[in-house]
Length: 428
Image (cartoon, rainbow, N blue to C red):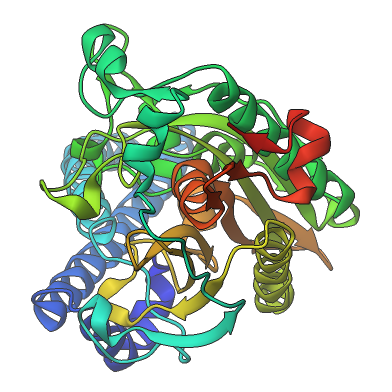
């Protein structure tokens, strides 16, 4: 959530930032917000003055009642003051109700504004306007007769989509045999790499309450994309970022406990699964998938250095998996609601001859922290912290690329880094 004092002091800058994210009606929304803010401050000022006047009269009434024993007019003055106090109490109650109403309107308007983009975010509205900033590895040349991963998994009987559809529905695959072992191997490898890099492993709940969804920005923006257990008003998580970041909701972090670096593995659940076609076949897009997530909480002046550090960590994972990849800096129109700057990582899928997104690494600056009331105290003052997260990594498209890129007539070869974890070198 944007900070109201920043918007108040930087109207034009706020409007320009919202427009770079293609937020419809940016100027109107900001001016509505500022109008509500003025109304709130004026109402609060009048309420404070009314309460102060009421308190002053209460003291005068006490004094007048004492004087009434020796001065007849004092009793009449006391009664007049009491009548005035009653009027002020009614006015105070009315102002308190008005203040509560305008504060609710202000809050509901403020939470609809997305985060402002960092100055380095490229102009643009569509994925085609994103900017490639790094590439690594050579695209493999596949042997004749090579297949996309959805055919390979049937050939080697390692994932069953039909069984998943039978049990649950489309987009819920069943991993079995070496497919299940490879999934488990990747999860453990990603976790071990993060722990070695200084992240504390967390195993969080995979259901969250509405307060947690609001804290990280999924609510009220993305409720339609989450599975909702209505009987208990709980949501299945779209990513481990949500419960892990919410560990620090309503917390004032001790300065010597910073930086905070957490990693967690969870299954992830997303209702939207895109359109039909080859680009969403197989593992390309699922309703349920596994992911290892890294999360950092940093001081404002350290957060962009931390973002680069997290991007380097993801680069290292992909290099160890021997997968060609590229890094994309997202343009304003393609960025998430809560992000100030996002780097997308894409692996090359040789059989599909296309790039597959496998990770997003983002800095949210103080946007989530303001919702979460996540702060630290320094020199007697409380300051909002910055939050960051990144996929390290999401498994489905990594597995798709591993299967396609490493297929040979003898079988599918496993990257050396994963062999100690899965216990086999080839899927035959």
